[in-house]
Length: 272
Length: 272
Image 1: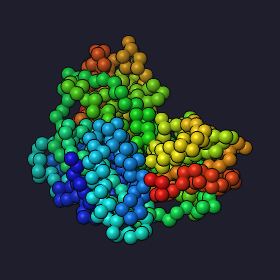
Image 2: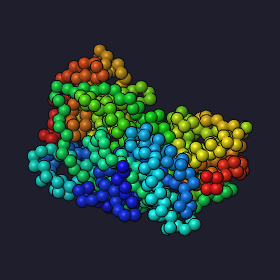
Image 3: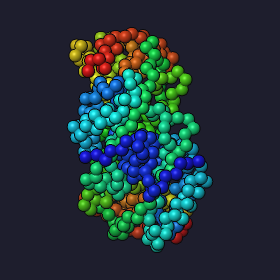
């Protein structure tokens, strides 16, 4: 069903459409031992969004490849957390942008050590100078078209842990590699799916946990005043590898830090 | 200066950032024998836009690689036209989106036969259902983030030669692989550079020729009425491999076809 490429065994075809046009998607999963706690969420997103791009990728086939990869690499890391990455492309070939019908997707599998966890006292965040543009047709898809995030990530320097990107409507949408949750009044607010460049797996997990806990959640656009105004009782970044990260300072504004969201969300490694 | 990858010799590194994030650019050049008539335009664009993405790529080094590629492949094709493709990526590595400082770019070189020329009686064109979103920071850059063009190119069926993509302002901006010129009243109109996803090399060449010929040229947004209204005296698609292509029918509206633009522009193969 896929052409499999194990990154530690060699390269990928020069004619791959992921390289040529960013014509594909990827997932990076946090793993401890051979267990990726959010595996089901990753498989759901990858298979669904591949479908949106008309790249054939059955969830069951992706799951099989994940099992192979987990068996193959978990021994390398022992009890240390690691990251499994799947890059799914439409395949090789076609005349220019137009894909050849019926080509077989390529699936590239790689692994790496997990990044260090963020400071539990909170992190320092700034605003990016790179505007975020989201094609409504591809909203939320973790596609290989990530040049905006790359250019914004070049702004991460010194203690700046993340930069927040805004769209043309002036709404603050997400970080380079994180989604946003704000505590405002009695509710949790996160930008709507339809406005997101990447709809993170951890965002989905946090939403599910908040709903289960009976919390009031609104998917609504965030403006600057929602983040630095008086009603803001906290800002959190979410990412499936980094988890839930409190922001203690946004562009020079101190923000309240508490463990409320982390407590509600818990550890996916335990809860899964 | 570059890690060179000849596509006919093998693959590219699985960790290449072009594959991971579309973190790079490309050029496709029309060649006859060992002469790409628009080589200078391609080298200008590639080196300038690499600079905009902070990918180090000196024009002189790119030119050397082109000379090697032309010497290597021109014998394959004899007098038949062919296409030389350069894919320049930021290189391999880095932690996530953030590039490692000082990494060496990868340059992938490939070649293919030229596509058949378009019908000189004009082609049939439709409107795409895929909206075009252009980040102002990357306007015009032929980057590897081309998912919108891929999805729009899937709409090319039967006699539909190209589909035209519109932005959120309702302006018709460009085709999947072509820029647009309209003859309106006494002037030529083409959408402004700042609004383009890809600022084509042939567009630049046509603009230069029109200016040299003393023609009135306006860079202005195109709306539907500019294309199908009474003032429209013709619509042309430009692409460095396909040349200048007349549109005879746009979404069911017949358009006047003449050789006026083709005559002014001439054949770059001869004029260069």
